[in-house]
Amino acid sequence: MAYRVGYFVGSLSSTSINRILATALIRLAPSDLEFFEIPIRDLPLYSQDYDADYPAVAVDLKESIASADAVLFVTPEYNRSIPGGLKNAIDWASRPWGQNSFDHIPAAVIGASVGAIGTAVAQQSLRGVLSFCNARQMTAPEAYIQFSPDTFSDDGTVTNEGTAKFLRDYLVEFRDHIERVLTVLPRDTD
Ligand code: FNR
Image 1: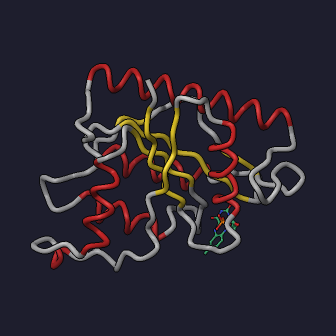
Image 2: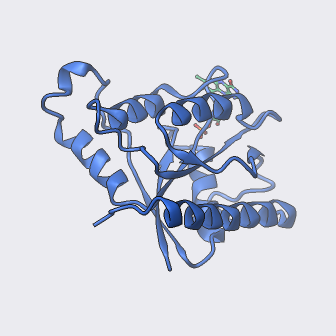
Image 3: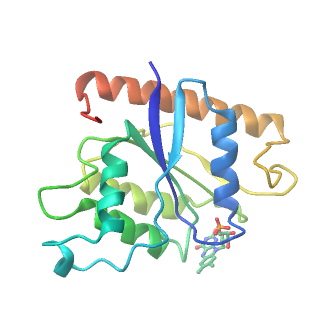
């Protein structure tokens, strides 16, 4: 059975290393994972004032998540936390009250930075947010990626075999996690 994974790139940068990481993950994934991006760039800043009448871009966001079997967050760390654009998207998706798009959804987080800490602090913060949103997170393996052009080409080729194996194994674990969660908590994605 193939699973459709909606992925978020937490960066809006045109030269995002996390977008390169997302491309690398898609290239390395097992054949039964299919990926599509859930864009966050055009969302206005969330306010409860929108709850009675969500704009089309936010309706699209929620419909994209509803159509996914699972979600993957590929995110940078900004000032030891979640980038504002990604947090804004999560806030949109979690509302209106009672219509939380992340309820019970299989989820995983990963991220890259140029520093050795590899987005660890942002990921811990993101995990707390996703817990509150009741997403079913893969707890292990964790993936804190230190990005280097010696390891990742711009087209998402991973030139270091150790890193490629780590990412492949991570994705196989994610596939198994999705399968386990959906066995207990099937999603109506039609
Ligand atoms: C950063 N960067 C950064 N790196 C890190 O490891 N921990 C951090 O807390 C921060 N904080 C931070 C704040 C802001 C506003 C910026 C713009 C950058 C550096 C960051 O890892 C680097 O810019 C990456 O290239 C960001 O990922 P993307 O946007 O290229 O995917």
